[in-house]
Amino acid sequence: MSKPMQPKHQNRFNRTSLYKPTGEVVRHSEYPCRLNFYLRPPPVEISVEDFERFALDRLQVLKTIENATLRNKKADEFRREMDRVSSEHMRMRTGHTKEAMEDRKKDHVSHFILRLAYCRSEDLRAWFLRQECALFRYRFELESRKDKEVFLKSLDINWKVVSQEDKMNMKAELESCAIWTAKAAGIQNVKDFVENETYFEVEFEKVPDLIGRRSVLVRRGKAFVPMTEQISLVMDEFKARLSKALEATAKALPRMDEDERLKPVLLNVEKQYTGKDYGDVTNVTGKVKASEVDGLSQHFPLCMSNLHQSLRKDKHLKHGGRMQYGLFLKGIGLSVEEALVFWRKAFGNHTDDKFQKEYSYNIRHNYGLEGRRVNYAPYSCMKIIQSNQPSTGDHHGCPFRHFSAQSLEATLYKNKVGAPQVNEIVRLAKDRHYQLACTRYFEVTHPEMQSGQVGTIEHPNQYFDMSQGKLPDSDAMTTD
Ligand code: SF4
Image (cartoon, rainbow, N blue to C red; front, side, top):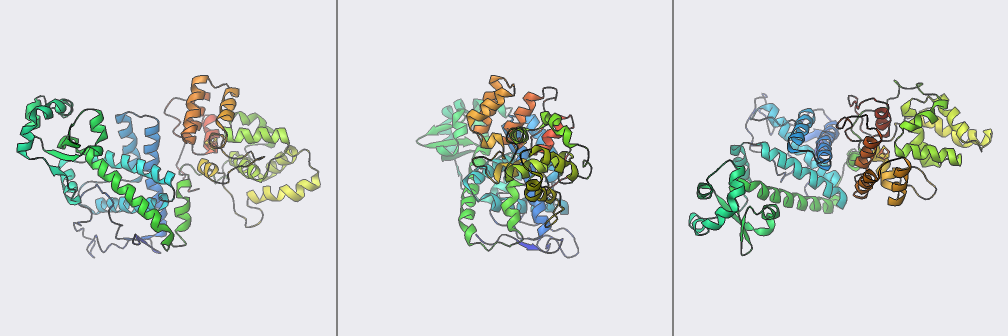
């Protein structure tokens, strides 16, 4: 794969390919319409800041799609969610204005950044492919017929058009398959529909969904697809091309000369948390006393209540647990002084001397008072789920990801979750939808929260806030 983009150390794009020097907009053949199959890398230079911002903006859109799909949102709800997230993060304006060109360029660039980030494993590729297909379908369905035609023409896809003569020879069979399609298109007379419709001849494997609902005629391995159903064909092309491109990128990656400044962004983007910034604790510090933690633990998510209970039982936590739990407590409002009191009491079996030597440094370090003096942020769900896998004797991690199905089931029953919901949550966890499983757990254990208010749990501190009746607020964003 050729080098797709060169980051620039300026806060501006190289605009020479899209705009005249005066800033007057020229119509550029690169973006004739809003749809894009992303066949070529974007011909632009971007700043490192934009590189990260574009990736996170697209990630917000893809995560919204994932969330809506997993929650089986109805078509109109899905459209509403998509309209909202698109207008906030990835606008796609119509026409050929300067703003519209910027939108399309951002769309193009951000797709390629995430392609680089998500080609690195089979799971990531599958996730990216699923969400990108859904995004493309949503946009394709919104597009005008004229723009769709312009776009498809530009792709040069060789779909064989069925001649009028061949069409007439199969007229009766085509009519019997077209009843549903004609009705959906608002056409009552099926005969007229078939006569006026353009049909494409394609391999039958390309349109399993149309065959499944008996909307196409299949003869000798070929399917005859009406133009009205072209979305199935387009999606098949989009999926096949993107899937191939992702594999090619994955193969090329080890040979690619990745910029050292971009590596951390690419390696971590899928772990990025894009909600409220829980790293800034200035507003909450001092709100919680060490003696109040036990009482507040009823509001903790399972990952933190598991750590809290293990700490009380063993009077000790290993390093991974201390980091995960300590930073969470910092995020809920424990000051460094109260944290020292809390952990000293919790480690009741240790002498003062041992505690001072082995543990107090780490606690102060978490608050940025030792070592490199970095003010560490509480971990997001993605970070907990994807980094530092727990091993024997560890209690950190996410129960939905790291517990066995039996342990998770037992924990849920112990927390008074009913059998049907336990099955549902365990199934979600088994299908690797860990945060959604956590969200369902939250919904089941907080029936007072109205459905739809919760969104998806992305951060243990978000869970804690919501459990206390504070609704999510993503005004302040963080990237970790
Ligand atoms: S999904 Fe997040 S908040 Fe929920 S248990 Fe896992 S890590 Fe904790």
